[in-house]
Length: 305
Ligand SMILES: [Zn+2]
Image (tube, rainbow, N blue to C red; front, side):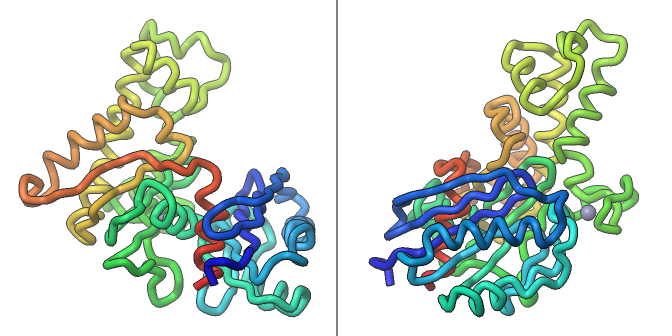
C-alpha cells in the first residue's frame, strides 16, 4: 500500500488544498480559495476539480474536512465554515463518480495523523494535537491507534467546558474553551484590555491575533497580558487532556499558536500548576512540524489504511 499514490485533500473554510502523495511525500499540489459562500454545489465542484487533476495516477482519495464528520460512513454531518454541507454523503458521491476508494475524516484528525506519522508526533504512541485559530479543535492518537470515537466526533477540545456558567457558545453549550480562546475572542479580549492604556495595540485600526502577537513580541504589556490569559485558558484545557489521555506529546498548532513563546510559557505554567502528578509524568508540549502539509498527508495516511 505504501508505494501507491493517493490524493489528499484538505477542505477548510478559507482554502482547499490538494496533493498527490506517495509514501508521505508530496509529488504535486494545488491550492484554491474555498467558494464557501456559493453553498454546497460550489465547494463540492471545487473538490471534484481537485480530484480530477490527479485521479488518473491515484489508487484512492483521502479528504480532511472541517466539521462533524462521520468517518466510518463517509458522511459530512455538519460543517460550520461550509454553508449547505448538511448530511452530505461525500465519500460515496466521489466513489461513485471516480470509481476509486474514498475515505473522509475531520480536518483536525487529519492534521493529527499527519503530524503523528511524519512530523512532530513521529515515534510517539500517545499524541494529542490541538488547533488554535478561529475555532479550537483537537484530535488524538491513543496507544498507537487514531481515536475517532463512536460517531467520529472524538477530540472536540474547543467545546469542552471550562466555566459551567460561562458565555453561550454557538454549539449550544456554555463556557466552552473556544469561547475564551478562539481568534475572535482573543481580539475582543485585547480590545477590552487596551482601554485606558498606552498600549501600542491602539495604533492599529483593526486587530488580529497576528498583530497582537507581533506587539507582544516587541514587549507591549497589554499584548503580553492577552496571550498570558489565552495561554492560561488553553493550559486549563490541556490539563484536562493530560489527566484524561496521559499523552507523550501535546502538539499546539494553528494560527494563534504562531504567537510562540509568550503563549506556550503561559500554557506550560498553568499545566505545571494544575495537572495531578505533573512531577511523575513525562509529556512535552510542542509546536507542529509540517505546517500546511499536515492535513493532506494525514488524509492520505487515513485513506491508505
Ligand atoms: Zn461550544
